[in-house]
Structures are given as C-alpha cells and as structure tokens.
Amino acid sequence: MNLILLAEEVVQLSQYTDKSIYAIAAAIAILVAAAAAIAMGFAISKAIDAIARQPEADKKISSTLMIGLVFIETCVIYALVIAILIVINIL
Image (cartoon, rainbow, N blue to C red; front, side, top):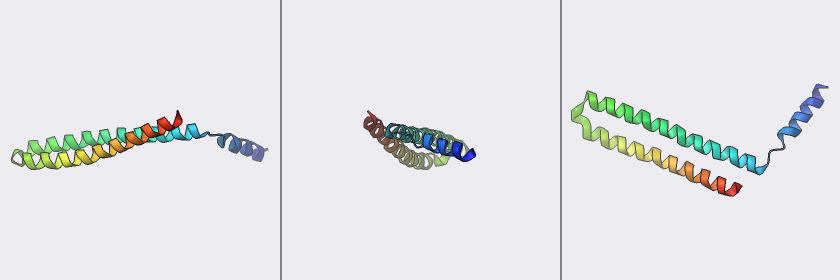
C-alpha cells in the first residue's frame, strides 16, 4: 500500500511544467537581488561605524565602500536581467 502511495506522489511531482520551473528560477533570481540589498545595507552600516571611529580615514573608507557596493550592484543587475529574461521566456 505504501509503495502505491509513493508511486502516486512521484507521478504528481513529475508533472511540473516548463513554466513552473521558469517561475521558480525567476523567484530565486529575485531572492538573490533581495539578499544583495541586505548585504549593501550591512556594508554601509559598517562603513559608517568605521568612519565614526576614525574620521581621518574617511576618504579611504568611502572609496573602498564604493568599490564594494559597485560589485554587489553588478550582481544585482545580472540577477534582475536573468529574471527578466526568464519571465519573458515564460510569456
């Protein structure tokens, strides 16, 4: 009896369409963008703390922060472009 139920569950799980897989992939890409936004918030917070502790290192901390934020933002742009391409592919 359990084997029959297991076989029915396998058949139900295998009924995913291409559109549902694309939707899951787009959702993952959006989650990557959200995680990057959180990372940017942490980076800015730590930079402000560092500037508050050492005001004389303001320019060095700011330039390093900007380079890091650019790299994070590049990842976000790639994730959003991939999500847009996936959504266009669904339609």
